[in-house]
Amino acid sequence: MSTKKVDARGLSCPQPVVLTDRAIAEGSTDIEILVDNEVSCENVQRISHKRGFKTQVRHEGSDIIVTATKS
Amino acid sequence: MKNIFSTRAGIIVVGAVIGIGAALLQYFGNPPNMGICVACFERDIAGALGFHRADVVQYLRPEIMGLVLGAVVAALIAGEYKPRGGSSPLIRFFLGIFAMMGALVFLGCPWRTLLRLAGGDGNAILGIAGLIVGIFIGVLFLKNGYSLGRSHAQRKASGWVFPALMLCLFLLLVFQVSFTPGGPIFFSAKGPGSQHAPILFSIAAGLIIGAIAQRSRFCTMGAFRDVILIKDFHLISGVAALLVFAFVTNMVLGQFKPGFEGQPVAHTQHIWNFLGMALSGLAFVLAGGCPGRQLFLSGEGDMDAAIFAIGMIVGAGIAHNFAMASSPKGIGAFGPAAVIVGFLFCLIIGLTQRDKISA
Image 1 (cartoon, rainbow over the protein chains, first blue to last red):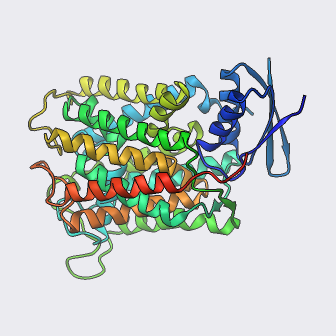
Image 2 (cartoon, rainbow over the protein chains, first blue to last red):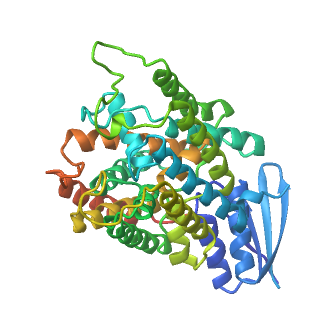
Image 3 (tube, chains in turn cyan, purple):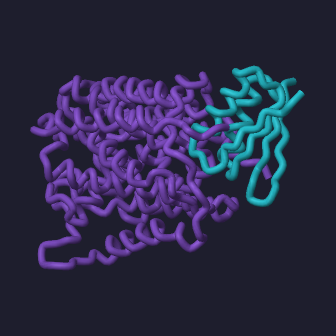
């Protein structure tokens, strides 16, 4: 199963959540969301959990990668 | 380390602190039903600087400076100070102008809308209704791919400009600086501009609220937007706490006076109370945050948010100079014009700034 990638770096609220929710609505069950700040990370995690996804967070340089997997 | 302020319980506590704090600020001297109003206070700052000459609303409100500087401290401690900018700044500047015009037609920002409700001002019901409708329209644009584009990291040195400006304004206040006889800096001798809590109390309240609001991501516009957009009740729980605790504190302090007529710094022209806040609500959605949130973001180094805040200050100057601002007697002669032009601007921006960013 291919991972849907979402690049939400530099996008302000609520863009990261809107893009994540759109990916979920399109049926993706494995999503990797790239953000560059804590607020976006928190918000993306919150919407993912709300939609029944489990999340994992890792940092790569100044980027934050949130992996959302449908549970 | 987990951010306890951004949990559900955390944001409720923050809302409660803001509600109680605002009621106390009023008790200690700020205008009635105006313990904290980001729009009114930025308008007062514009007046103090001479950007308008409405002599009843001129005062360098330390709460505004505190909100920014408190957010700076919190962001630095949490490692969230990240200078950034370049996401359609000119558009954000004008969104700030029109957001302020809408707010000055109603006479309040979303925080003051809530505080007016908590003080018994029935006219704020129209304000809240308008705010929700404006946000609803903004959500339609969001769903259609509206975006002002990506911001980019800026130099660490750049993010200090706006907080430094706030510090300078605070010093101008503390030292009561006068540049020419009679002002600026102007200090209202009567009217709401002359009603203020002691400087130390105001700056302390601003700093504390700025810090906890930054940590909790408190945003009154986002609260309603998230309910409409994704049926999420996280942010609105903080807003509800603000309302409830402001109301309870008002009851305890004898500051609750229910009614429509004769409410402090308010008018009863329902249609314009509604439309003014609808314009503001739409502009806040398009700009990504309520006025308070924009100040907290600017403390994190977000220069697009700072431009919006400056737009609001400039908009206040324009609104009072061009007879667009309301008073307790009612709307200004060009208030309706401001609302119409503002809606036109926001509609055009909402429709043309479409998302060409592929996810």
